[in-house]
Length: 429
Image (tube, rainbow, N blue to C red):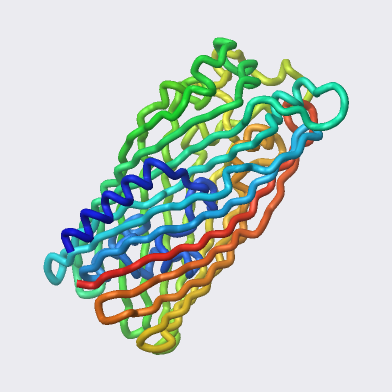
């Protein structure tokens, strides 16, 4: 067991610093394990593995002693158009790690540690929409300028304790430790929005890391006679150190905190073999200025780009231009069917309205096109023996397109669809 834990931790850490995450519910993944993803991402009241601490720390007390290791092949497909220029993002293949270990210390107390790719976003276009749209090339065809894109990866480590306070009620708490990696390239056209009028802390500054922490608290309650389980959890804002190399890109001089969320859910046993579960989660993007501040929204009217002054509203300032994301409510619904002692099947649906305001924030979101809304999922578990299982999940995020005016004066369009394949192994002790 010690060897397994050591090897898994080394592998997950190595993958964490080499692979970004392309999120599906705004800037977050729909779920953090194959079992959860197979059911549309539900986990609030239906704990199934050691990664549950990334959602509801109270669920740790329901899964005994076990270890999990997973990898997900994530395949996003992003397209964009601006000023008559079309391109498809080359950032379209990622391998994402996940791991967890839960130890039941006694009948009431459990300890857990998990590491998950919590969220992020990325894009890589060969056509630089901003440069070309601002200075259209002469002649025909799409002129090639410097590549354009961003890469944000957020990993979270979740040391967790859970405590049963009665036969049917469990509380849990997690110290959320986070590492974020970011780089941006090809954003030189945005110098017109900075206070300094330069790109020294705006773009093409290489990879930079940020660190931070927050808290997550959860509750799990049962009504055994009714076959009902309820769960609720709250995660604070994860306060991150600032990206100094990109202090004129993100509002508040390089600040990119991870937003807080609040969720609740239930699970119901409808037959001896079948259960349904549902989660509702609200994410508060409006509390993170670099995400929520609106972008330039008056096409063809440069004087309207900075309603007060560039010193107050320029990129990087407290009131600096941002992505204009609204708070998002996500609905997750899943079913779990134990076919026999070896096979379990899952299916689910996940919906979250795009947080992007297409009325005036299309331009900046070309590099972060988190438009997907509807997700269909399927999953299965095969038990090799009493101590080992193999888990699989597939997710398809249906393509969704948003269009609207941009500061350049043209209509812009962003579109994304996604597929993912997750494979994991669980060990019971």
